Length: 170
Image (cartoon, rainbow, N blue to C red):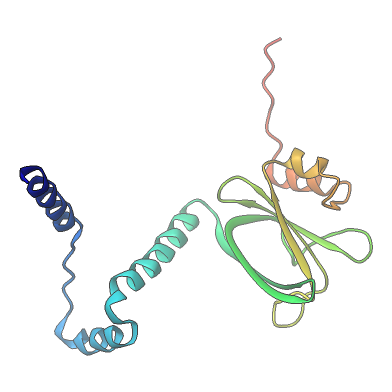
């Protein structure tokens, strides 16, 4: 019994630590009341989700990356995919492949290589068709025989990023 009481007290203390008080200006109270009506008791979850997006966007900007959003059709179905990264070869200056395929390459915030293969860009910024894949390295992308990556694409992306110096102990 004493063990259960101690456990309950510990749980209550942990819960108390997680609670935060947010003070709302009186003139903003009606907005908060309406928001609570719309999202219900999950107002905290809703705000936390949006704060995560805000923090991620700010952190990405300080690292020199941006939120990249791509909208395209894949096998006839509309898709929108987003990630944080930095274009090395952007879609507005693509690498031309074979069979009217265009390629863009980004370095992601997690240091992966994102390769976007696409068709024509429409006036609304979406693409008539596309395919997005990612790789652990330029070398992995270049060696992947299933990805249809044209010769020279990874070399061009590496040159834009800057080829790292390999220090030799000879």
